[in-house]
Length: 213
Image 1 (tube, helix red, strand yellow):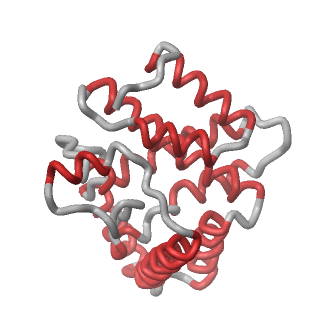
Image 2: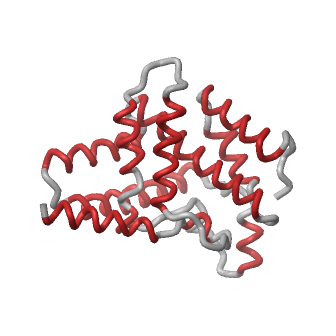
């Protein structure tokens, strides 16, 4: 029980860890990793029941709850981290675009991120009961690699929660660079239910007009 309490205390640190994507965009008091986790778990549940084929809701919700807990030790990362200028003006210009890498660069960055986060997760759960430890690791690997219909679905849902948060920041912050999130949404999502949800966000936040930033 001592090790479980320690685990609870460690994941509680996520309540105070801001998401790096908002930090580099100079959002004041940005959402924490735990706040993202809370909403994406509810979003994944609600959106999953809209699917015409059956998904394991318990698995999806568990996956949502654990998908970022590795960041207690690994920290949060963004696609911009390896190319982000120190100069604020140059950084702001870069953040108006979606970063483009070669296939080889993508592979190297993905492997580096995967190893860092897997090491962080292993450190976090190393003293948990074996059965629970294995379940958490299996769920995380499923999410990372999209091994099951639930894993593939949640990967999309996770990105869409970030897209929704970016839209909310854009509405509240005049100069927030939301355009890259639209590019990502158009390029990475092919699920009909989630694409329909994106269109509804479009109508709600942008009145069917493409954002300028």
